[in-house]
Length: 195
Image (cartoon, rainbow, N blue to C red):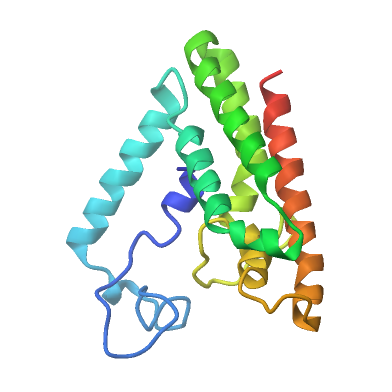
C-alpha cells in the first residue's frame, strides 16, 4: 500500500459512545488537540513504526510499495461493480487492462534492475494513488472524512443499484463514464511507465 494511505488514520482511538465520522478522538483538529491527549506508549509505538518505514524507504534496494496488491484490489472492485453493465457500461475493458498491467508489473519485478524498477514504481504511484486514496486529484484537497477503497469508483457504485433508464440513472451515468475514463487514463499512464 502507498505510504500516505498507510498513515492516514494511524492514531485511531478506541470507539466511544459518541457518534463521530472518524475514530481519531473528539479533539482531532480542534483547539483541544493538545499534548494531554497523547498516550506515551502509543506515541513511542507510532515513532518506531514511522522510523522503520522511513528506514526501509531510504535503504531498501527496491521501494517497498506493492502495486500488485493494489491492482488486485482494483480488479476486485471492478468485478463487484459488474451491475453497471445493465446500464450500458461494461467494465470488461478496464478489468482486462488492470490484469494486463498486473502481469507486466510481475514480469518487471523479475526482470528490471532496482534503479529502473524504482522509477517504474514511482510513476505507477503517480497514476494510481490519486484514484485509490482521494476523491479528486492533486489540485484538490479532500475533506478529513473516511473514504472507501477506490473512491474514484463511487459514481459506479451509485449507478449499479439505480433503476434502469431513470433520470437518476442517466445523471449518474455521466459521472460514472467520467470515472471509467479517469481509471482508463491512469491505467494507460501506469502502463506507459513500464515502457
